[in-house]
Length: 179
Image (tube, rainbow, N blue to C red; front, top):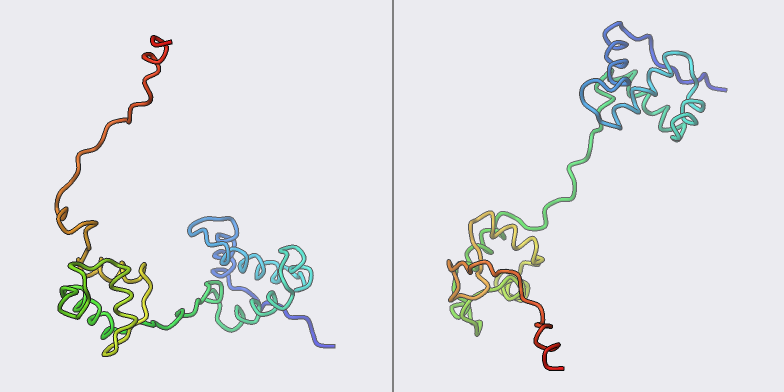
């Protein structure tokens, strides 16, 4: 049987830092706190299965945290997230979207006088020269980043409607007088 995984002897600085994290002083990151609890419990003699039961974690996770702490020290407490999904829309695609959005639809062969997000997204998807598949929300974000917006109606661009007051309900007093 293999020997149980244990944390290496802690320095005074590491022990003080772990204690500060566990007590909640400073940054309150739950992953960091849980990992600090695992390391401190192991330093005080608890075995990974017991630590896992106390924290409702998997014993393999506890062992992984202990191994990472032994190898990297306090840096092992911080989560290292991946870079995420690669971008589907390239910089060239974004430039193309801006170029098309600033062009009148009739110039590119569409029978409208102005673009809407739906019309522009449809054109970009079905375009034969440079097809770009983009959803309306992402398209709105790209256009907003470049200072481009489509008004609800082209004649209303820059016109602000005054706020309407509270709408009147039915006039019940006149109905009583008639009866």
